[in-house]
Every structure is written in structure tokens, then in C-alpha cells.
Length: 156
Length: 328
Image 1 (cartoon, rainbow over the protein chains, first blue to last red):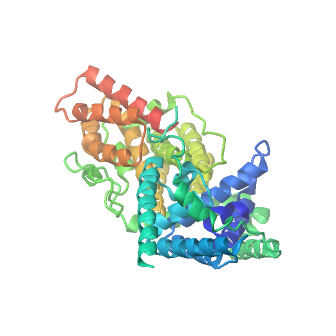
Image 2 (image 1 turned 30 degrees about the vertical axis):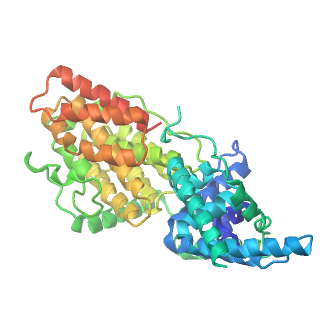
Image 3 (image 1 turned 135 degrees about the vertical axis):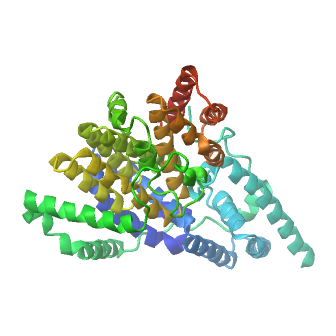
């Protein structure tokens, strides 16, 4: 479940986790006992996550869920001193607003890379893109997010 | 060597500290806890699936071999007839028109169906194709079925095309045992990519019929030929266009290999009509550089009006090289 949540967010993870176990049940006759069961299950889970990103409706759902999770965190209570709390809350709100203005794919990339902390190779694998393409897009997305963050500061 | 990987695969790039800080303010991302009713929900879904198949659930326990053979025959004929009506006839095309529909590999529509069958039937030494396939070692499919990486799936799609063309060629030559072995490998590859269920089911019935020896090889070849449009229909409905493209590529390369082995110059040249289209597609799929270079070397050879024995041997070597690099 944690594996799917890290890749898909909470919204779709439960459904995909169910699918993983149903697929495992169906493929059980093909399972080779000499291979570790955990690796086999993770293989299925990974494949299901890839499929989710390749389905447009599901990809949109993942995008919406990620944004909703960030919004939720943006309005969560902050830590330590009141000054810190105010500063960090402002950053979180700005981050949420800036991410909202990015194209969906850039948003997904940045969230997977910076927040979920997945390696680039794994992001590329899940999204069905080459590592080079993901790196290139990440560079552009980072730049754009920074611009948007500073624009937000200036306008406020 | 890492196959199907872009050459510029490197470690992760450094993260922008400012962005790291901003995202850190969000705190850790949700990790998710399995809901307490997950087991119940999974069980319900499995039961739903079982109920959907329930009509046939009794079959394995009571079906006698005679019943099974009869039902298998009915299934093959019904699938065959459905596909048959939607496609052109089986007869070999005249040399002027053969393989014309193949010129666009990106075409996912119905045009150019049965291309592998037609190509083989049109060859001058079609009845000897089984001998060429039989002369090769029976390669095993990779045993690992875990992972499901795009790279593993890609090589599996390519191998499926190769195995299909091999099985068909074996049937043209009356080599039923060889065809059965290739079908086994094809079924293993289908299982490794979790191919749409209709495909292994169709092959399973084919395999049963092959073992029953009830029909002669030429009839079985016609039944097996229907697998190609069935596969294309199945994959045209999915998001994995590469599944379609690489299957075609595998079958095409195998046909070219057989044509070269048979010394059929006309067929070799016709097989070369799509070489550039495949090369372009392979570039987009980040195929191994060596395979792309081999395709580039093939292009001028296949475009020649006349081919010497030496050139045919060179084509054969290049084709084998491509097969090796794309199916490992």
C-alpha cells in the first residue's frame, strides 16, 4: 500500500493496491516459488502504477489528489515558533498556488521528485519516458516553479 | 550492456536547494495505511471475477478429451470466422502488390492484416521454411516473470513477433513439432507481459489442435495466421502502441531472415520496403544503438535492384545481429 501511495497518492492507491492483489491471485499459477514473493508482488505493483500513469483519467486523478494533499499540508498547523509558523505557512500556500499554475505533467514530476523523493530513473519508468526526457522536463519545471514562486511574492 | 536504455542514463541530477526547502515545509508526504477492509474488498473483487467466469468453471473437471477437442475446434473456428470476415482473403498476392500495406508501420488500422502469412506464402520456397526454422536452436524465453519493466516488456513484444513468424514458417514447412515448440515460447512471452487474455487462450487452443494432429499443417497455418489480426486488435485497444509496433518488427525481421536464408531475392527486397519506418520508430523507442546502425546498413542493401550471394549473406548477418540485440 505504501509503495502505491508514494507513487500515486492516497486517492488512487487503495484501488490500485486492490488490483495488485487481484492480479497476484490470478497469476499465482505462474509464480515461481524460487523467486521472492515480495519482489514478485512489487513487480506487479510497479506495473499497475505504470498503467495508472498511462491512463489519462487516472493520471488526472493522481494529479488532482497530489494537489489536494499539498493543499491539505499547506493549511496544516506549522511547527515551532509563531514567526516560523507564519513564514512556513506562507511558503506552503505560495507553493500550492504556484504548483496549481503549472502544467499537470510538470506538477506530477516535481511532486514525485521533490516531495515523494523518488529517483529520476524510477519516475521515468513509471511515466514511461526516457531518463533524459524526464531530466530535461524537470529542469524546465523547476525553473518555471521558481519563477512562479517569485512572481507570487512580488504580487503579494 | 544495458539494452533499451538511453545512452545518457546518469545518476540523479542535484536538487535545487530552494525547492527542497519549499517542499520540506510541507512535511513528509502521506505514506498511507492499508485500510482494515482491504482484504474484504480484494476478496470481493476476486469473487466477482470468478462469478463472471463461472459459466465455464465446471469444464476442466468434467470435460472429456473428446469434448475438449470439440470445444477447442468450435472456439478456433468461431474466432477465425469473426476475424476472417473483416479481412481480405488468404491467397498469396501477386508480386506487384504484396506487402504494399506494410509501408507504414505507424498504421494501426485494419490495412495490411495477415502481413506475415502473406509474406511467407508469397515466397518462392515457402514449403521449405520449416526446415530453416528447425535448423535453429530452440531458444528459451527468459525465466524471470517478475519486474515488468518497460525494457523487459519491449524485448518480449519483439520476441513474440519473432516466435509467431517462426511458428507460422514451421507450419508452412509441415514441421508441426517445431511449430508447437515456438508456440510454447510465444505463450511464455505473452504471459510475461500479461497480454490480453484472448491471445494466450487462442494459442492454447492452437496448441491443443497441433498436438491432436487432426489437421494438416497448411490448415493449421491458416488458423495460426488469424493470431496476427487478433493480436493487433487486442493491442490497438490498449495504450501500449509499442506492443503493436515491436510485435510487427519482430515478425518483419524474422520474415526477412527467412527470405535471406531461402535466397529469395524478391522477398528480401520487398521486406526492405519498411526498413526506414522501423528505424525511425526504434529511434523513438531508444533501441540499442548497434541495432539502429545495423538497420542503417540494411537500408542501402535492401534497396538494390540485384543482390549478389555475398550481399544476401551480409543481409542475413545484419538481420541476425538485429534480432540478437532487440530480443535480449
